[in-house]
Length: 115
Length: 124
Image 1 (tube, helix red, strand yellow):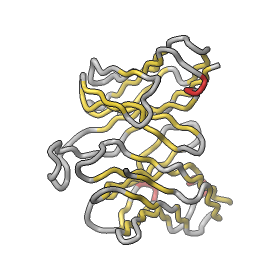
Image 2 (cartoon, chains in turn orange, green):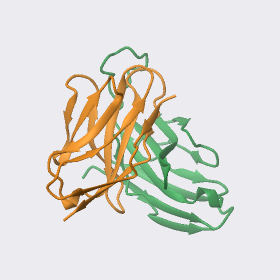
Image 3 (cartoon, one colour):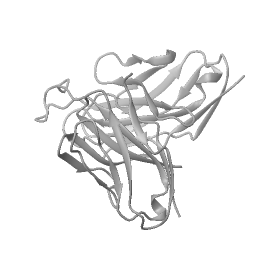
Image 4 (cartoon, chains in turn purple, blue):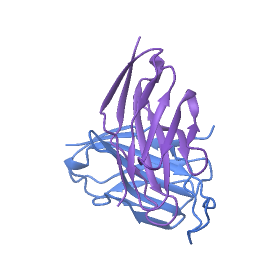
């Protein structure tokens, strides 16, 4: 069975500082990984995905994520946080081939960026 | 504008009263799905559909029905709602393509999903 862990319910960071939102996963075979963001009273929006290739993936709004196969992690990062980045962030995984087509989402991490 | 729409956005109902939440997308996507979002549990998939007349259960299908008679629409039906179905519901869609490594017999590429704005359902 596949699973995703987002170990922090909430991450607090000051505006201008770098931010990291952690995600670890478990899946059979190679993973297909996603990050989504949910702003208040809105649906989820796609940020970035990892399929194959370069371990550092760049996405929307200046976010990037680093895939680490040995640590089975896919942490979301941004060099300089903005107050407008405050939102709920979800990591998701499914097998790249075979297995379940149903993506597994993490429980979400609330990012709060303080002015 | 490419979008997924859901109606209603908010609904308060009583136990046992059948209801339908509509979902429509204008991107000609093959894949559509329904999720529920509950505090501390993240998103859990209820049902999904690979194309017209093709639907399958997700992780939490009990108490729900879906249909896919047209490509753009994927309604969620609660025949006899109960209080434990009080939740925030999201519809999503994505296009299908060829798997990057081509090893799957389904040749399925799970592209990023586009989500609707959500429907907050309260069952009293």
